[in-house]
Structure formats: structure tokens, C-alpha cells
Image (cartoon, rainbow, N blue to C red):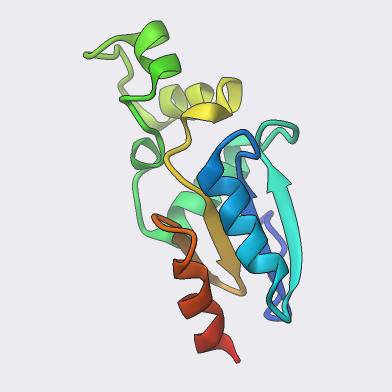
Length: 128
């Protein structure tokens, strides 16, 4: 059993409230019939274990959750970051959640990264 509690009646959104994409995605979710638990990465610290679980749910390596072209990432790590393993990438995410590529929606044992906020509608319709 993972550390992120999952429930088919509740959608979890890991997002950054300081981004338009994060806020628009949250607005779409709030307009649905689903119960929404929103985790604002700018205010809530997500642990390395939780990030690892999210990456596993998404079927992606941890480093793929990071926008390596984000200005904050570039300032601190440059174009050729000296990051070699998952622990290095997890430290980046834990210490600077702004560099997370996009909102992550978790519903039951499924997770999806949201490229466009309107994608949420399709994901929620599949669940009804």
C-alpha cells in the first residue's frame, strides 16, 4: 500500500497555485461532482516517498516530473545539471516545487499529468 491514500470518490490534485495552469486545472475540478483534495505545492511539502509514488503511478522516472527549463532550475543547476540518481532529482523537487512540470491528477490508482487544464473534463467523464 502506498503513502498516498487513494479513493475513487475523491480526486487529488498536486499543483502550484502560483501558475495559471495549476489554478485553471483546480477550477475545472472544483466544477465537477467529484470531491477534490487539492495539494498546493507552493504551500504543502510533498515528501520524496510521495514523489516516488506519484512517478510510479504515472509510469515515469522522477526526473521527468521536473521542468529542467524552468528559470529557477536553470539558475540553480544550469543546462547540464550534476544530478545522477533519483535521490538527486527528489531533492530538487522537495526544495523547489516550482520546477514540477505540470499539475498531477490522482484518481483511485490512476494518475495523469495535466498539459491543458481542459483535459480534466475528459478524465472526469471517464469516471462517471
